[in-house]
Length: 82
Length: 399
Ligand SMILES: Cc1cc2nc3c(=O)[nH]c(=O)nc-3n(C[C@H](O)[C@H](O)[C@H](O)COP(=O)(O)OP(=O)(O)OC[C@H]3O[C@@H](n4cnc5c(N)ncnc54)[C@H](O)[C@@H]3O)c2cc1C
Image (cartoon, rainbow over all chains, first blue to last red; front, side, top):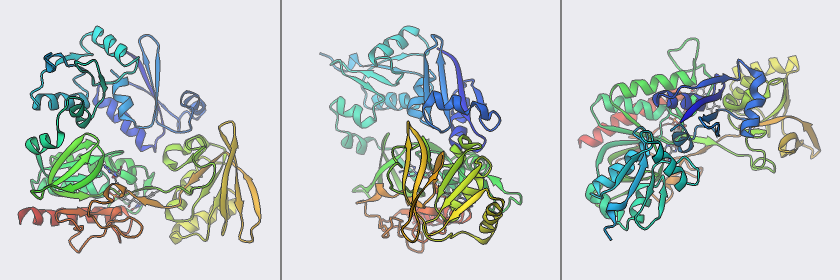
């Protein structure tokens, strides 16, 4: 069971757009951290993912376990949001 | 032992790959037990036990105890001891048209063909909208006097194609061939597909510069997509390698974030006058420094961070420039590797050769957009070629 989903995005990133579209189609609610609007949170995305890129999707489960998915990667995203 | 009775498939209703595996087993008339992990927590628990904690569906247990995670139909049939080629030729569902790629050329072709009631399946491996979707603002696409963002244009194209009935599937094509009946057979990551006609509109991908440090610091300081990763370089110093239209356009975009940009150009800048004028303005302001006739030899760093680039000028003098990140725009590589050996003829760089009807060397296989040899690498022309190809394909299918 999902507790929360957070996506780090920017306004211009097409892959972020694809992740958001995918989650919406699946009816999954998410919080978005837009790094153009919240530049100070860029280091948070980097710490979570280990890389300097978006989208970074953080899926937190009810038991507080976390999965961090970098990029638009359906093979990992689809099972993570079950 | 009754082998088939004991197959258990863990899946969920919303999962496309689960549906594919379920359809496949049903088509093969193989019995199985379906456990929907959304409906029963213990199914989810069991699935996680089987996958050692990985959230992967479909997860399939075979009677011999083997576990398959997210198998392709090919893998599944192999594990079940079935001959997939034989099965495919017996069960093939034949599409009128399959379009490979989901960029502007593909989506335009799909708008035309579906309006003409030609059943059309679009296969895209990455982002719908292709290269156009990852471009910030498109200023020269006719009809949008203020420019349009790449994401918006892609969204409009997708919705328009879907309005007429185009089906867009997330899938990658690995091979094309022709079967004995003249149908085109596409090997994909999700199994084989058949079509009467095929349009290849696979565009191109960013090229690498192939220098030390490039691989090592990929996404940790070396980037190929300014619209994706530029935001990490707010108030930082970066270098851009390249000097063509795309490199200059991306450099201008990156000025929004970076405090300073070193533009490293191997020979001279080859971009439109309007873009060059904009660059000159930033050079005057001191925000961009241009290095012409300069080779970039290496990207250097430590502790997983890029620290500098090593360059060499025309007279062979080497120097180091301190930067926090490097963006590479040194041209594009055609997405045509999957066509090697297929009979589709490529030019020396790898772009697809076509005749006046945009048909390739294989009858009924067409090409349009950036992937076509001689294409002008613009969205407006990719869209034009998509429309032309659609009309030629209609003729081909009518004959
Ligand atoms: C940085 C940059 C800026 C640009 N700016 C402009 C501009 O301002 N104006 C302009 O007119 N043009 C611009 N262009 C060029 C423009 O983006 C391209 O000309 C246009 O996108 C080409 O469209 P296409 O449909 O032919 O290919 P693409 O847009 O490249 O789409 C091809 C699609 O095919 C998919 N694909 C590839 N192989 C497979 C496979 N085997 N199976 C399934 N799918 C596959 C890819 O994932 C991709 O989505 C720019 C390009 C770049 C790189």
